[in-house]
Structures are given as structure tokens and as C-alpha cells.
Length: 413
Image 1 (cartoon, helix red, strand yellow):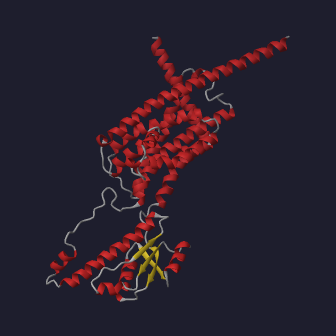
Image 2 (cartoon, one colour):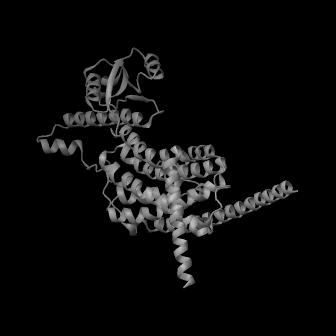
Image 3 (cartoon, rainbow, N blue to C red):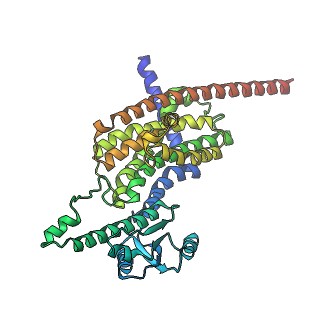
């Protein structure tokens, strides 16, 4: 009978802590912003910025030293492409570089004076392309447009010189080995579909750690809980404290996570081909691991401002270490080991494979196992740090009680 009584008391205490934590989330404006407002509007801002997916009408400067019909044809076809816009003509390369250095243009097409002469002599002609490499999307548009147009014109010239009798012969002569370009997993070839999934997973981890850290930092600064854990009948056990707080965070982020991974990608038309059941089973350990990770970190950080500095510092490196913006195989082993400490590393990889590539849980079993392992490790770590907080709270309470008794005895004397 005592076992059931103890279990009932533990559940009641955990429920009490859950209510207290939910109330704290509502009362603390900083925590409310990171738990509710940032997950709601931050993804919308990111998605809106990258919604165009690719850059269009990138301005380029042309230095036409040939002034021939072939050079004008090349310029016309480049200007007619959707990716490049001929901004102006320059007299020489120095003038064109000046326009690029002032960021009025992103690239230069230099057509030499012997361009048409070499072609008419059946010699190979060249066109020099100068690109601003500070923005890879602009570089890609400028370079690939010039490459595509030169290949197209080369095929047309080759067809005219072949003296073929039928259109089919000309077609085969121009492209003896044809190919079909199929963009797998990212049909638009856009930057948004490439980067937004990783950002969404990082937002979940980032806002959870920020909110939990702010709540813990506020508790310390206000001395409400006396080193985080208040002296109360309901806070009489380590597990009930951890479960009560984690339950509050999980209820909030069950809704926020569903919004981020199911609604935001479809709202902006990003690739989303994963089954919701697989996403749900994969994101369950991810959210729980992020919660226990945030609870562990919150006990280490003393002031509420420190958690903001920490998360801002590590967010960009975590994006690189996830293997999305930089190949995972090229990340040094040491940094790969560092990345395993964060749930976002496996969360990003698994979410991309399910939602972007149509994978199943069987395809992301390594990531899923690592997330459950992180859940167990960070749960144990959270229990240890909260146990230490309980010890400190009782120690402080005992000291205060001794001080009060001493003052009372002194006053009585």
C-alpha cells in the first residue's frame, strides 16, 4: 500500500511542478518569446527570405572587343537567359572590374578581338568569365549561363559545318551522347529547400535551450528558488523535479515541432515528401533529447544573458558540423566527435533524409539510435545536476535556519 501511496505522491508532485513551470513560462516574457514567438515567426522570416530558391537576373558587364555578329549573338543569348542580365558594356577590363568592385555587377564577360576570326578559321575560340566569388549563388548563375550558351553556340556551329542531310543527323552530330538532367531530392535546385530543413531543426534546439536557460537564470537572479530548487514538499525528489519540468517543455514543443516540420515547409512550397508517422517517431527522441540537454546546460549557466551568448556562438558551427552545408566526410574526426554532443547533429541528418529524400525509419536507424542514446545520457546528466542543486538548496536552507535561530536566541537574551 505504501508503494502506491508513494507513486501517487510522486505523480502529484510532478504535476505540481509542471503547473509551476507552465506558469513561469507564461509570466516570464523572455521565456515566452523563445518558447512561443521565436518558433512561430523565426522560420517564417527565414523561409520568406529564401522563398525565391534561386537568384535571377544577376547583373554582368560585357567587354566586347570583337564587335562581331557572333559576339552579339553570345551576349543576346546570355541576356535572354533567366539567370543573367547584361547591365552595360565596358570599354576595357579595368572599367568592368571597377563596376564589380562597387557591387554594381557580379561578373564580367570578356570577348576577345579574335573571337569570330578564330571560329571562321575553324579554331577554338575562348570567352573569359570573371565572377564575384563572395556570393556562390551569383557565381553559379554567371558561370553556368556562359557555359551553357557557349555549348549551345558550339553545337550550332558544329552542325552547320557538318553538311548533314537530315535534321536527325544534325541532332546526333551536335550531341552524339545526350543526357537528361534530373534534380534528385531538390527539383528546383533552390537554396531554400537545401538549407531550411537544417535551420528548422536548429531552431527547435536553439529556442529550447534558450528558454530553459533563461528560466533557470531568472530563478537564480531573483533568488526565488534558492539555487534553482525551492524548498517545498513538492520538490522532495530529483526525478519528480526533472519529469515535471520536462513534461511542461515537452507539451509546448510537441505543438511547436509539429508546426515547424509539417506546416512551414508546405506553407512555402519546400520539398516535403516524408510520411508524418516516420517524422513523428523520429522527432520524439529529438525533442526529448533537446529538453534534457537544455536542462543540463541550464544548471551550468549562472546568468540568463550567458545562455544567449552561448547559443549564438555555437549555432553557426553546428550548422556546418551537421553535414548539410559542408560534406560530412570532409569534417575532421575531432570535430565530428564534438558534433555528437549536440542533438541537432543527428536531428538535422535524419530529418533531411526522411522529409527531403523520402526515407523511412529504417534509413535513419543510426541517427535514431544516437538520439535515444543522447536522451538517456542527458536525462542522467540532468538528474545529477538537479540532485546537486537540491543538495545546495538544503544546505542554504539549513544555514538560514541556523541564522534565524541564532538571531531569535540573541533577541530572547
